Length: 364
Ligand SMILES: *Cc1c(COP(=O)(O)O)cnc(C)c1O
Image (cartoon, rainbow, N blue to C red; front, top):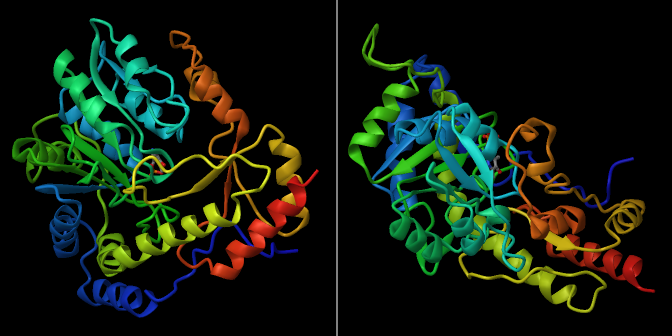
């Protein structure tokens, strides 16, 4: 039986004609890798995010790993990051050869706590990599000030925060560069995998274009150890078709979130605060000490929910070899948090139905 309110709807909506025309254009041209769609998307995405340069790559994970490598971060270096995220943000640090160091979350914002990051700095620390989790920017002014004071690079994981702003300024512009994912569920999604790096540094952008293409400077001349990670023409064309819809889709996400906040005001759930009006609501997380029971009761009423993320990264088997990190706020979030459906195709009636189900299952 399908849910009354499914968590996601990834079928095409008002973007259908534009996406189909983009796909047809690529097929008609017969050019699939490193062509005019990618070049145009890189210019358009850079302009839309307020960066000077964008470099399209294969995934968000590769975007993080290549950005670190492009900045000279690798074996022996430590990168401080958040303990609750898609595991890929920390896996990417390891892909670059560096060591992730987890510092705790700010419990209100559910993003990397600048004081915890400060306390985690060692002589090996090279960078701080906050994650703008759920679409809410981390405390970037404080993190940027910390990085400046301690001579560290600030690298933003913006995979969940396309077109978010922090203190009125676009995310991605607070440090050396930012990494984006275009995985289909992201605020700007492809019809497959995709990613990009944004930066204001021309030399870094040029090096990243080499690194994503096997380290080639000229054809068949490999200057350095690169990888094969390119945003293909089909995905670039699809992303170009969707880019003009982003302002209205982001506004729709924010309107749905406001409707949830109002409707859930007296429900038996904790609704985390909006700490910045630049929040773009990739997800709508709520917290409950009776999470599993609440989710099961919602599922019975046809409301699909997911947990982002159930296992704090320091507790992941993949990171068992790292220096153990105590992140009590992160552990509590991982134990309490779950996400209600929120995407641009959700209707007001869907939000009201979810809120009514929440009220019914949390009433005691
Ligand atoms: C999706 C995501 C990634 C990884 O992106 P992919 O395109 O799936 O490789 C990294 N970090 C965060 C926070 C993400 O949400």
